[in-house]
Length: 186
Length: 86
Image (cartoon, rainbow over all chains, first blue to last red; front, side, top):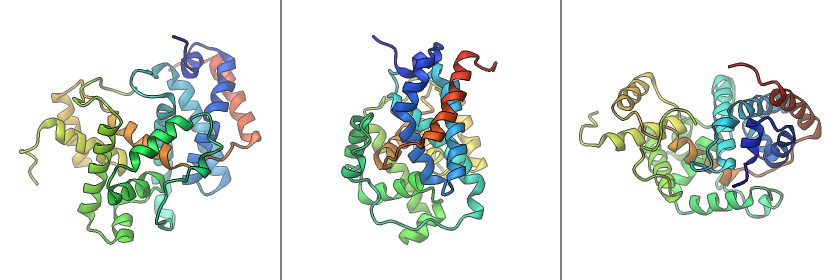
């Protein structure tokens, strides 16, 4: 089985760096732009994320997750850390009625379109309120209380929707139903 | 609130979901650490992967600016050629 881009980065293949940037640069940049309103913040964040990706390339296991999911997971960790550090100084992000991207918006995302399509398909199977809570928290970085206010829901209900939605999503994605696969950071 | 009626796995999934979405308060983080000691092989990243899927589903893609790409490429090549010691 041929090595993935991340496995080649871990093996010291310099050409894989370019391929990795070509494959995931747009994804990481877009995620950063979503949570970093200023261009320079997004640039710093993206550099930080890719250093983390190079550093953890050897820990990627294709049996557990796709490369796109792994890259997104690392990006999310970094971006949420940065966002929460600054969140006290930020205004509440405007609430959008529907934030699942349309297929047209994804036309340029050819490298990982299959993965994204599958993810969107699974997201659509969630209950609307679960999907909306997850989108507002994970994609727009809103806190539990901000979502409660925006959706006019009790705090506990927001947490319940988030939990149920994510647990359901994990099931839909065919993650290991029994859970105990491996511990520690991938 | 008591969680005694739930299985350890159910409670772990809830706490990991909370962590992936909103982060954990110290009390919940302590509970998570305690439960993970009971189930040390539990897949602690399962909810982070699910959360990453939400991002994959929702992120409209724009190309990375060339200048940013060039800077990161240079740094990446340096890293691959001479990875910093951990």
